[in-house]
Image 1: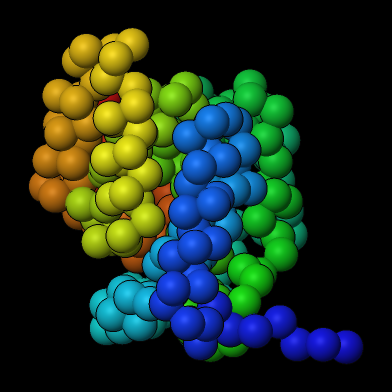
Image 2: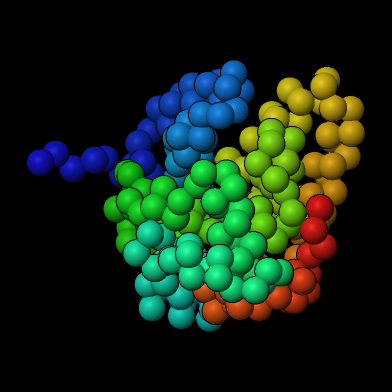
Length: 222
């Protein structure tokens, strides 16, 4: 079986070309979430090492990696989370997924083109917790909210992909929503003020009231 090439080893020009093709598809149709992953994978590969080091230098991140914590179809029981009291993180997360026809198994498979196990874990962890970021920040899944969440993500992680998606989405969307640029800027500032979402142990707080989780992380719902 042929081994998939590591994206970080591809020539920069090749990665950027592939990323821009994917970005163009996303700009034409924001529903193409698979192309968002393609774009991010290629555009972020050249700067990934710095973000992985930051994750692993955090004791919480080290513990998470050592325990191989995952949020996927093997570890999440949506029915059990829905049975938790309303207003808890777990109930809100399960309701968010069910209402939108989403399931945790979307990100069961490891990221393609990443040979470093640490990098693969961190990328996967961020993908698996993306919907939790939605729940806690209060940003929905409409186009404007997704753009704002990308700005929040850029503030939290410094990911070039998130920054470009936020900027491109703002330029494209401002015509239909004049306040979008202000909302995106507010989301970025909120991300800068907040505690680190990347190494937060979400699965330890399913039964914690969502308001308390927000307080722990220093955010107010959008």
